[in-house]
Length: 422
Image 1 (cartoon, rainbow, N blue to C red):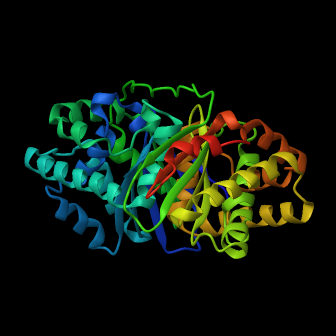
Image 2 (cartoon, rainbow, N blue to C red):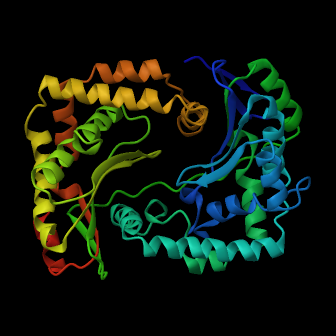
Image 3 (tube, helix red, strand yellow):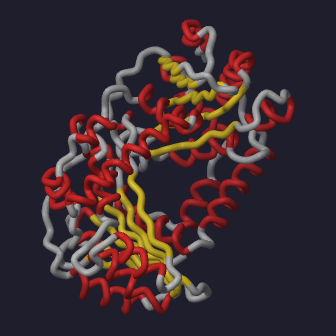
């Protein structure tokens, strides 16, 4: 899949991918702003600002006007904040690309940050924080980050805490916008039925006067773990929800694709080892899965499962046994081949959507300043051997790197740490 990259005079990077076989265009704007850039007292700042940019601009004064501008031509508009970036995106039929660009450009460069809307949205964000506590599944996936990276930005909920959100002022939001939302800290990715030269011309005309500046850096992760760690939140729920987490690898680590394949073997899909062992063979869970995250300087491998309280010990035992199998035994060639095909197939299926294509190129450029094509990634995966898998498993799957988060009715919480042994 080919792409073109252009850097404007003000430092703004623009990546275009022409897909003439589709009817849509997705415009995604990636900003180097997220919870890793926030001090403790301003936790949730990036996320709150993202919400507010949808609430009115100089040209479209209200949230409704912004929504109607895009939805009025059949499009979709949304955004999201993560630990290392914030994204704003619009997907429209290709004749309406100019409208999508005008709306998103006005949101980023000329937001109103109206005080009345600010207070209303503050309440909305607090409701969002409350909702995460009401969902044990969601809560345990937040809690495991707190265990992996305690008392630091990577371990915090991206939305912040109610106390910090309550203290965020309009001035703080404006100052953060002016500091982080600078061209050199932004990547625009456009994918779909487009003429790349026409897109470059339109983006240049709308954003050429966007003044550059120096954004603030992110807070590095502290890696201080020397023994297993456990956190339990007692709840009166039918199931106990758990996440077993290990620190992983950064964005550009040479073994990141090996870890990704280990994740496929462990918990991606119905044929994964954990799904087969815990659900199909033992009937201990309804849901079990795993996922990998990569950050600038660290990463994680997380396994999630939900089970009856009386089965907690057995489920944890099986999770650890499967980690040990990958560490101590070489994966058979037939299983390795199936895992590679699953990983490649899922990637190719995702990239049938213009939004995911834009995300593939835009997020790589923002986070790593290096873009690998789909073909290059597939080539990397094809070269992974059983020896590579075992080598990386031996390096990462260790007792002193184990972390466990549990939400639900747990009778033997004080013994959980004793069970974490590899």
